[in-house]
Structure formats: structure tokens, C-alpha cells
Image (tube, rainbow, N blue to C red; front, side, top):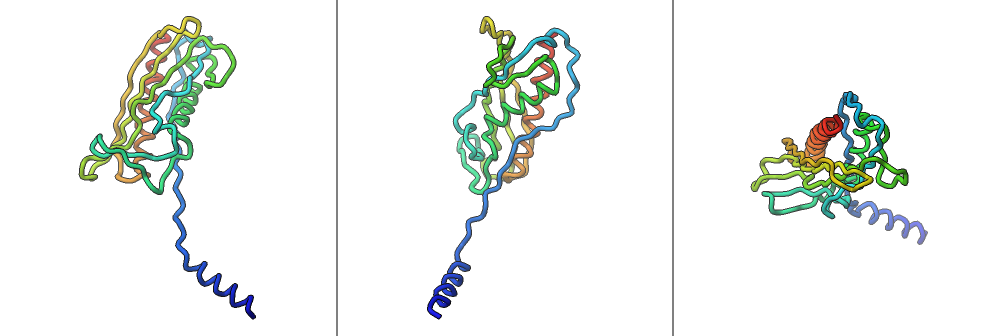
Length: 197
């Protein structure tokens, strides 16, 4: 009887405990209709996509947002499934493979030799709010540099920017950031195709 009473009390208090809501994980995955490259200049060349350069904030799973371009906050119940730095690097590799400007696109850890190296600097990748939190947009700024792997000389370098209006929550921010990133990736691959003409 005593054991039943202990179990009953345990269940009673256990049922009254507060459970912490689970975190929502968001991923970055762009789906862009790609026109395959018609450029022949780089079609027999290989390119290695270096791990993207970024601030340390983009190397964590924290989902940050800015207010009034001065204050940075973190969503408490939303995180990235993969750090933005890693996810964006993967998306660059993915779109280059689909575009087929180059014969082979290698990841940064590949030991194979390449003709070119693509360096990507993520300068901005954040959802921004105005001062009174009534308006929100995604802001993406990235620099792409094409480097000759043999000489380490920069062949070409270009900045790309995109802003996209966003609903004022984490989900809206992710959608807008994905759209803005898609815009930047389309512009950057079109630029690479021009460089290879």
C-alpha cells in the first residue's frame, strides 16, 4: 500500500511539472530553376568551393535578428538545423553543380587538385527589424572571388546584395532569407558564367 501511495504522489507531481517547449529547427534550402550554362571556356575546368568566411555568429545554430541595425538579439525558441555558414557553403556547391559552368565542383575538404578556387565572404545574413519592430526584412550581402589555384591570383571579384520583405517572426525571416539568398546565388552564378566567357 505504501508503494502505491508513493507512485500516486509521484505521478501527481510529475503531471503538474512545467515542460519546456521544444525548439523549432529551420534549414536553408534554395530551390531555383537553373538554366544550364552555355559557356564553354570553363566547361573542362574544375573548381573548389572554399568554406565560406563569415562572422562567428553565422557559425553557430543561434538564429539572430537585428533591431535598428544596432542591436542583435537571438530567437529563444528557434534555431538553425545547420549553421548558416555551412548551409550557405553547401548551397553554393549545389547551385554550381546544377548550373554546370565547370566540369567538376569540389567541396573544400576535397584532396583533388582544382583549376579554380571560389571564395565566398558572407558579410550579412540576417533578419532586420525597424526601431519599433513593426517592419522586417531579410538582408543578404556576399562577396564572391574566383581565384586561380596555381598562382593564387584573384581572377575576378564581385559583391552581391539582396533585400526581401519578411513577416515579423522567425518563420517569416527564414522564408525571406531563403528568397534573398536565392537571388544572390542566381546573380553570382550568372556573373561566374560571364567571367568564363
